[in-house]
Amino acid sequence: MNNYLYEIVNELRNGSDEIIDELQNCLKQTSLKKGEKLLALNAVCKNLWFIKKGTVRHYVLSTKGKEFNTWFSLEGDIVVAVKSFFEQTPTREGIELLEDCELLYISYSDLQKIIAKYRKAETVSRKMMERYYILLEERLYVMQSSTAIEKYEYMMHTYPEIIRRIPQNHIASYLGITKETLSRIRKKFAVNY
Amino acid sequence: MNNYLYEIVNELRNGSDEIIDELQNCLKQTSLKKGEKLLALNAVCKNLWFIKKGTVRHYVLSTKGKEFNTWFSLEGDIVVAVKSFFEQTPTREGIELLEDCELLYISYSDLQKIIAKYRKAETVSRKMMERYYILLEERLYVMQSSTAIEKYEYMMHTYPEIIRRIPQNHIASYLGITKETLSRIRKKFAVNY
DNA sequence: TTTTTCTGTTGATATATGTCAACTAATAAT
DNA sequence: ATTATTAGTTGACATATATCAACAGAAAAA
Image (cartoon, rainbow over all chains, first blue to last red; front, top):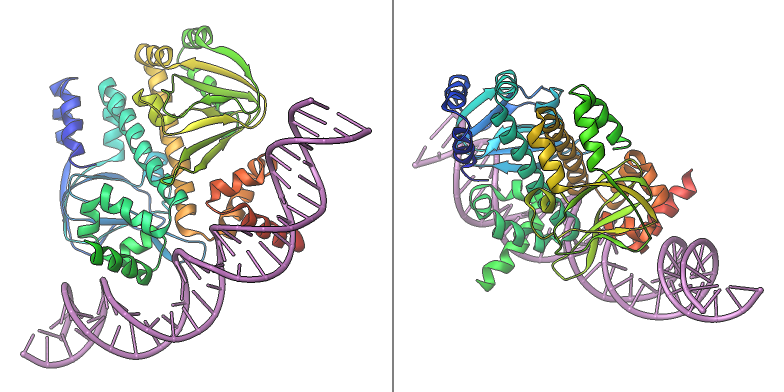
């Protein structure tokens, strides 16, 4: 999903520069520290963020009240709790900074205004959802069909940056395995390569 | 997702009856038999279907070349291989009938024409993607965080119709467990209730 | 720097789920 | 109705992964 904003801006530019101007007026900037929450559990996701720098984790509570990670976002990624944002309802998905971050963001209402006003913006938004859906589907297939080793291989292959940047305990949580199991899997790979 | 088409038509009606008319002109009808394929692996998904009657399974091949189910669709559901349909590329996801089906369908090109022509249709399409995304996300969370028992409980609670209608071997495949394990889980529930 | 906290590793053991095989029940084909 | 095929059950055993505990290394705080 890297530098997706760039693509979006490019596509919007084909509509009119007016959209870009209006988008630019709505975009705000912020810096937050590691450990801070971009979105707390049960809050409503009022913004859509873009990561200029840093990493975040998305997490939910399991039935037993234990946190587990659902995804990670890095530089160039768009960050949003999709359900909460589009429905403007309290979120099950929290978002926490794993590193200090520099972020751009746009509010729900500003984005909806732009989408309502510019057909081109709506088209881009629709295609963005399609794209995100496809990525999510891919991840679901892997989770459904793979052993722990295969899942880790998939991550190394498809999202090497995540493997490099995100602490192992968080990756283990995402993969649905313990950090001990992940450590043992990594050991195997270290021997072979 | 039951009777989603009804909702869609309702929302489109708020746009203009013209859309409904045009949609109706594009919709075709077909009946297929159990075991037939709605979409073969590596084909391009050229249609979006709506199930009037029957059930289907969606499946992909795992890395080891074994089929596993990714989802099921029932009466009232919209059926489409999202990635293949929206990108018009060969599909990894096959769709096979588990029962004789009566289907309505619209071709990719007809649908795109309508979306391009009517803003309202694009809005509905965008919202549909958001909704599908949210459902998919929910399923991914369950797959990531749950034991076999919890997954089965989730299915019973959230998609009881699937549990009732779809053969156990197919459900087991979807849950990422063997039919033997599913049989043992079901036995536990049978004792308690 | 020193201490404390967080992150990752390793071993021993427990548990959940898979595999294989044999069987029964249900469904489809003849 | 009879046979063949498919779906589901059960038991014995194998394997993958979890749990618990102890420790080592790295990062953050004092």
